[in-house]
Image (cartoon, rainbow, N blue to C red; front, top):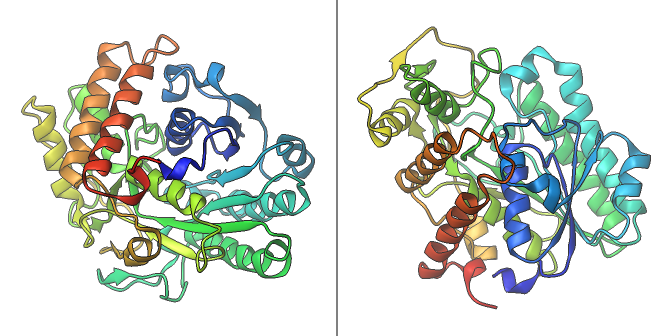
Length: 370
């Protein structure tokens, strides 16, 4: 898979303790990489990170992405960097604008500077967001659309993209270092810790739903009529991995790529919640509650550029994704909700392998045998 690009490479993931970072580390280990992870947070005891035994399977560095000397030490011998570290919740960013700009914008600049100074790093992927675009009322966002963000989270990411473009043009390209920008839709994955109950009302829809259903409660929806490009996290990560593996291909380095779902036009929050409740099968239904402020009522994401240049596409529909995520949460409950380190290793590996097999059967480029 990925033409064997990752086998034997030393890879740094910033934000490794987050939901995507945790799954990305596991995929890279399956691909034969040596993984180093950096995070400002110590992984929680009952997290997918610990339940995946990553504290024993990777090199974990506790630290901040704005700490240049720490990054320089951490990058020793590293070939590739996936920069995921960020304040990524819109509500949290709204409450903490200065910290959001420090982490998301200055953090990106610091990682770029560390890469510029590194003797070993050759490839890097920087994850931003599809929220950097101007509102189009539900029309498909494409990479050529102008960046016209509002509010701290998308503005910090749009600023980061300008810095990325500058470093690529003026420093990295001439040094033979290749970077790419990944803009993703709303990622859904098992093990997402960001529920509204935990994050003061600023959580993710699927996290809210599964948390409530596990506790026997009716999930609360703030904006059931809003639409989002919900994308299975393993599809999103396959996009990041595909982009990294093709940075040496003409017309790829320095470019931004959208990675979105099979359903290009956004799916209503209410429909997603209904499907989750049906899959869970206890008869509990969701209910509406007081709306919260959210940018963009309608969102849709076009990924034609990734299909045409990278031969990438998502492997799962929203319904297949939700079925797999429900399978993860059932196992999570059955195995004591992460009480035992390593308790989810086999479950996560099985879900990763099932996704890879589906992609292979669909003829998606990255999943084909080397």
